[in-house]
Amino acid sequence: VTTVPERLGLSLPALPENVLVARQAVTGFCEALAFPVAVIENVRLAVTEACANVVVHAYAKDAVEHLELDATAVPGGVVVVVCDCGRGVGDEPGAGLGLPLIDALTDAYELEALEAGGTRITMRFRDDDARIDASV
Amino acid sequence: VTEEPIVVDGHGGVAVIRVHGEHDVATAPALRAVVQDAIAGATPVVVDLSGATFIDSSVLSVLLSGLRRSREADRGYVLVLPAEDGAPVRRIFEVTGLIPVFAIRPSAADAATAATAGTNT
Image (cartoon, rainbow over all chains, first blue to last red; front, side, top):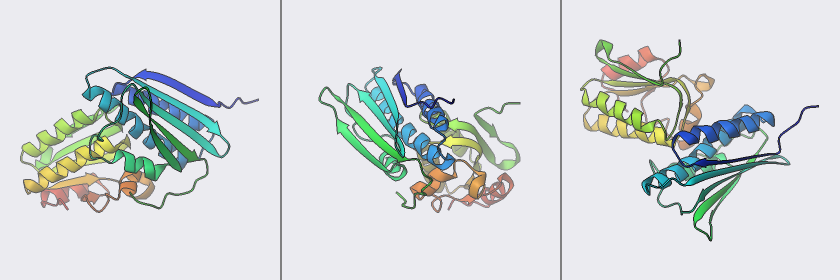
């Protein structure tokens, strides 16, 4: 009997080197769920962009915040929540390509400002190999 | 032998920056410094992504800023990106629509020739 994980939860200091940790954890989770490679590539990149957003904003404030990631297997796919606890997400860092990429790579996504401060992004991915044809 | 994440080879009048493995917001600053140094070095620049297994938008931002500087300096600037399924990082270029923005060649040799000829579009 093979046990398939249903949920992955991570809480890490919002440091640049932890984006890799989050990416590898969510990649392993999707591999355990036997998702197609193309879907895993989308999840890896979208989760990296969401985590990078958290890290860059925590960094800009010169405060170590927490990066929280929660992935849940759902029928037909996976839902990944990345939370920037304690502060809001301001302007996007870098080339401003993060959110457009997330939009292109996910089946759906939602950004919420939390009452206690901070931002939560919820990203849904389908586990079939549907190619994304829309460019950013 | 494990290749270093970022290697610069300055032989032959072209600065070749080989990017290996996974790169994101943690390593983008180091890559930015290497790309800026290479452009300041007054030689054509090749950024070889054939050994890269993952890049995010912060790395794309570095590559775009290198492209802008190279054009300002009227200097060759060419990326190496194997065609089709040969490059794991090709997808982010496709999704962002940036393939036509960069000068891209499938091999390091082709890229060095193009960069030496001053290609940056």
